[in-house]
Length: 315
Image (cartoon, rainbow, N blue to C red; front, side):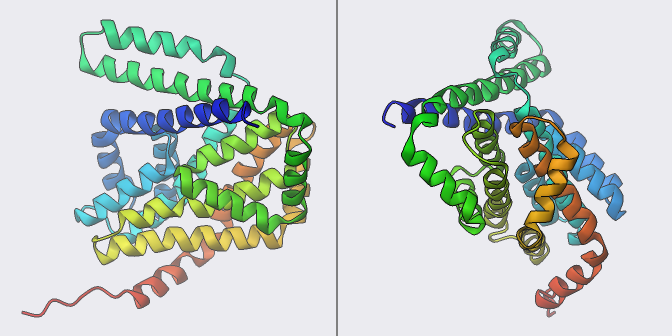
């Protein structure tokens, strides 16, 4: 274990750093465009969901998109009602990174690293440098995953690790809590799901164990959103609470219907590798959660408005 930890933690830190920097870089590139898109296309719930999903794919982080929405709410350019669709869409968009992680492209990470570094060094225009940075961090992200994949190989022969994984497989709630705790610590649901996919690639975890960790990551990711609402407006606080309620309710539903969910993932994935099954499960869960929640959006909005009415200014 002492030989595994340095490489595993190194790969995880690289992954987290890369995804954070990639998100910041993409925000620098696309924030003005994102502001225009959010202002123009979020009046309709379905359009807002599409906008939230696309922006999350573009920026590489659901938290970044939701926090961006909260910033716009506090600035008065966005209403809580508009943010609802963006939050739900962000949950769909974040599954795109899981599909990428499930692809075996870690060994080719050197290509975007070299190209990105070259663009950053030799390009004269700032816009080109930004794209070079994005490409570099994209390569770093997958290099971090590659390091993690290699580091966990010895765990195949570890009785202690096998016992721990067996416990997760047998106790879904424990796996969910572990997924939530990991996400709370690393502040990235993508990193948590990425770790589950990495373990799946090496056949070190079952599909049930991977799904329970994935469910926990959905709850853990709400922490940074709630932090972003501190000292914000009531509209912003309602957006943060909606994110928490939406994720919590869908996680509870996922646990209650876990066996059906597991069978459905297997049917959809057919003969796909385990890592692909976990990535598919992440996408199926979030898309199904949004579709199932749609009829109740208006009710939840009224409930939050009732709990947190707007302050009436006294003249």
